[in-house]
Structure formats: structure tokens, C-alpha cells
Length: 324
Image (cartoon, rainbow, N blue to C red; front, side):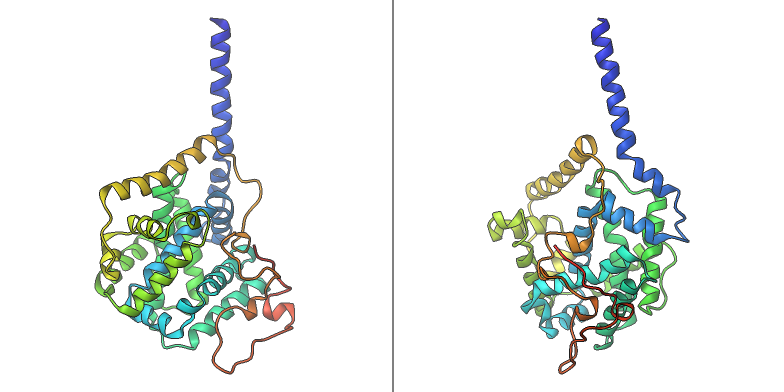
């Protein structure tokens, strides 16, 4: 009996040690001021704690915006999101990742924001549409992590993420930015309820994005139809209706969402904390720049506008970054 008791004691200690190690970063984040240093909180959550989940959530956030006709039509008319879908995906990840990795005040962070603002200035985009896109960046990661990851976000972490995107919005000159997560969430729901509508151009952009998803591992091992049905199973009724997608069966929802929840449980009880950060440029889905890239050369340019080359590091952000 003493041997059994000893084994049980060691097992309990091992579980306790694993629990402490698994939640070490949560305790570290709790010590960071969510008002003064939201970048640090967003960086730790996005590159250490939930890199896969937050990447999926941000991709899904952008996908949702296509269901607003004014956004979906604009993206379709540029031709970029249907003809160069991989490049647009890569550029979006890399530009949004720059301030996360380097901070807003760094040369790379400034270069990433500058390039985003230059692209937006080429088109007539309303402040409300810009604010809605920002709201998806706030709300979708919180909803995804809380639904599917190995632990839920704390209120402090939600505040840190919210403040990070509030700061991003200010750098993008967006007006009337909500103060709290709850205000962002209300704006997000109200805007979708009012503006989501079926539009053929929006559907074309959505279909191109789903086709791109089918080229990523492990999805490229599955038939295209299966990947689409899996995607539908993650969508809510408001989004499905806006694109005219079929309603998934209850079994499909249980299998897909249950599979994601099971992944979270496996990580919670068997996974080890990530020893090193993984940034967007290191994700396997970013495939367009095997020889590296410069932030000032990413994205779209007005017709006839030359792509800037060989700028000083303080201006373009960049010594060449590596991707993949």
C-alpha cells in the first residue's frame, strides 16, 4: 500500500507541476499593465500562449468583413483577393504582425502601419467600415480562444487585447473607437445585424478565401467539398445567410467544433509551454516570400506607382525580414 500511495503522491505532484508550468505565462501577463503596455500582452498571447488559435481567429475576422457589401465589393474590385489570394493573405499577416513583434514605435512597426494606411488611402472607405474591421480584430480572437483553446482568457488579458487594437486604430486614424471590449462587442453585433447582406462580389471573395484554406495543411489532404463543409460548421447563422451558404447539419457542427475543443484539451493536459515565440512571418501558411521581404514593398500600390526599393531601415522598417 505504501508503494501505491507513493506513486499516487508523485503523480499528483507531477500534475501540479505541469499545471504551474502551463499557467506560468498567465501569471506573467497578469503582472503587465494593460493600459501602459498592451503590446506586450498581445505579443505573449499571440506568439506564445495561443499562436495557432489567434491566427485562425484573425483570419476568420477578416473573412467576416467580406459579408458587408461595401467591404466585399471593394475587395473584389481590386482583383487582389480573387486573383492573388495567397499574396494578399501573406501581406495582411506580415503587415499586422510588424507592430506585434517590434512595437508601434519601432521602425518596423511604423513601416507596417504606414503601408496599411497608404493602401487604405487609395480607396474611399468609410470610418464605420474601418471601425467594424477593427471590432472584428477585438471580438473574434476572444470568442475563438474562449471557445476552442486550452484555457479561457482572463478579464485582464481581454482588456490588454482591446487596448492593443484601440492603439492600432488610433495609428490608423480611425475615429470614435470604443473604450471597452463590451462596447466593441456591441458595435460588432449591431453593425453585422444592420449591414450583412448577400452580394455576388462578396461571395466571390469568400469563395477564393475558402479555396486558399484548402491549400493549407492539414486541409489540403481533404477533398475541397469537405473543407468547405467544415468551414460552414464554424460559421454562425448571420454569416451563413449573408453569403448564401448552406446551413451545416448538427452532426457537422458537433464534429468540427468538438474536434477543436478536443485539441484544446489535449494541449491543456499533455502539451508543454512554448519555449520560443512564433511570429506570423514564421507560420507555414505564409508562403510567398521564401527569400524574405521588406515591409515597404508589401501590399497594393496605385497603378503606375513604383514599388519603393532600398530605403533606409528607419524609413521602410526593414532590413529584409524572413518569412516561413
